[in-house]
Amino acid sequence: MTTLLAAATPPADYWDQLSTVTLIVRIIVGATFAAHGYKHIFLGGKLAGTARWFDSLGMKPNGMIHAVLASATELVCGILIIVGFLTPLAAAGYVGVLLVAGWTNHRPHGYWSDSGWEYVSVLATFAVFIAGVSPGKHSLDWAFGLDFAFEPLTAFAIAVVLGLVSGIGLLVACYRPPAPTDA
Image (cartoon, rainbow, N blue to C red; front, side, top):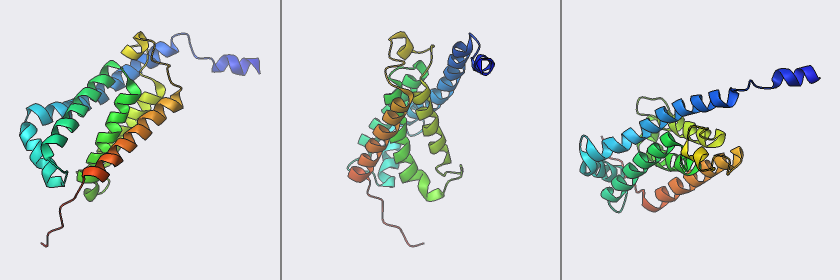
């Protein structure tokens, strides 16, 4: 039995390696989300175009409010995931924004990635996974001693529950889809 336990003990640098892998995933996932916020604020139609898009989806009372809040959440939460700071809260931001995006824009297209909700579900899943496993040693959470402030299931639950509550609350309060048009 002792031999089995010894064989199951990870190598001395296991946590360093895991932290490096987590850092790489955080950079990719965080940059993806932050880039969407940046795009909505500074590229294409900028905030005015994003606001018109939110209006067309049926977000009330004013598309500009949603454009500013969603774009800022994408940008800030993406950066927070990259640097690994307040990770469960940043992941909750992902879940909330992506739930609203998935429901209002992607759901009508089905699951698959050609405008479906596949993309938003995978991105939100990565964010809550990072919250659950912790951002690792190469993070501000680690530097400030916040990395293990929550057990993995608690951090995961914070990200999922807070994100779902905020997203569902926003949909209930503000989503008024336009009436279908006859083609």
